[in-house]
Length: 107
Image (cartoon, rainbow, N blue to C red; front, side, top):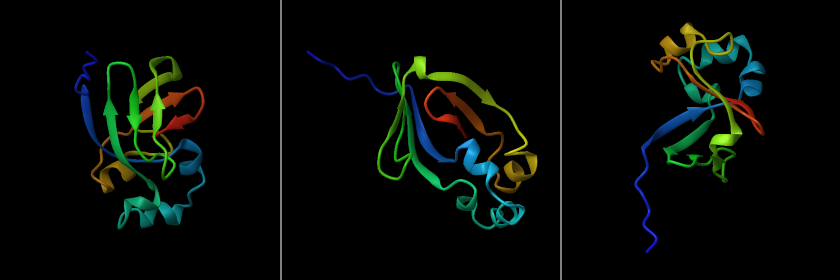
């Protein structure tokens, strides 16, 4: 019998890549105070399983599935791309930053 285990954790996300954030203007950062989608247009569900992390709709339609071997780093800190001002303004706290072999940094 093939039993499916319940996910370890799940929730919603608002995300962006480091390259996308780097391309945003100062005006975009100010506009994010009214609508965080300006900086973080990627949205969906994130689900942690024992063998993978599934980020739904990462490119608009397709899920991003990351296996442990594909994740090169995990950080939870403010950076020059997503600092205290943006985190505080959006009431979102420190970003979760995933380094990946194929997709660069995802925030």
